[in-house]
Length: 463
Image 1 (cartoon, rainbow, N blue to C red):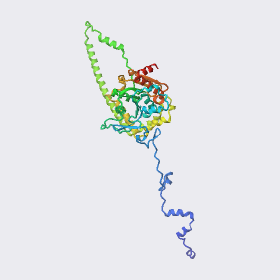
Image 2: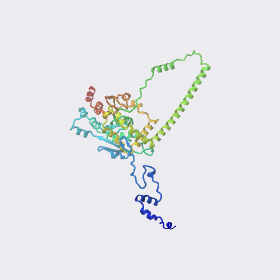
Image 3: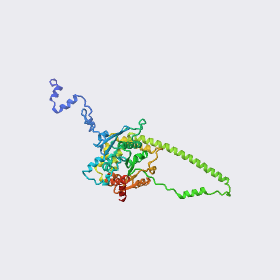
Image 4: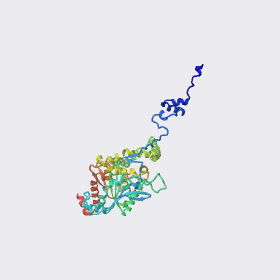
């Protein structure tokens, strides 16, 4: 009992904590602080612990044909030193002008083999250059100066709305505006306005690809303002000339002129009934045909409306960006006879407009306008009016054009009375870029033949 009473009580908790080894102190401190909180990093490897700030996630940058789409600018901010802008109906049209006087002063110091001595006799008519789909003023950069010397007057090239550096006007079928800036009618009006801008009564219109449609429509709108047409790789479908079957016509005439034999017996009752039945069937077939045509027109109208709604949606913008990214540069290379000769300078010239704000919306509106124009019942296709052109016409094509075949350009020339047809060898869809010397030579001969003095015309004919 004594021994039990003399037994020392256990040491105090504080004493034990003081005597505890150092490696146990962190553990005891955690126990005193309460149960441990669930750690996200412990439960889910790779997660961020509480209180730790992660750097902001870098947003993926959009790019179309190598052009950053997150740093787009207004078209005028991308202008060149020799660029100018002319406002029509609120649209600022980007254009460039080459003067023959400036070109003459520069050619005095260095000879130019592309322009012959015959060009010293001035034609005295300005030239307007109309680019094709997806192109711009850039596509004429290699020939503007020499053309100014050939014509002995100013040469002007402008970017049609939706292309180049012309301002991107907002348009979504707004009836309050006087004219759709992306329509063919606006391009024609702008073409005639630029003739006034040059203080000229008439001009030579040079169109390339889809620009040929603008040139021809401008002629039909004001033929007195167009001195001549030069159609380069014209994107105008020329239908085959219909050949009437003379044999069928003669047979029909013979049937109509066959005299009725008065001595022939009268038609039987069955024949009269059968004839009436056939007439009734033809009448019913005609009514059904009209109904089908009306139904087709309704469905076609609904289809066009649905297509327009899609193109104006966000999906339409995504689609046009994807197409330009995947096939834009490829299309430029495919337009050349030798794609390996397409330089970085050419690629940059064609992709520069992709730096302008709103380029995809403008391109979609231009496409929508073409669709609506093609569905117009009152608009006669240009291909059906080619025979009405009476001014001098030159049609130029490359022999290996993969976009507008040379045979189609030849048909266009045959459809226009008196048109001159020229083929440039080893050349694709862009003769003015790929073969500028040959192109200038062809145009020079044509203009000298049409507008030169009689002596020069005889000289050209002899050549």
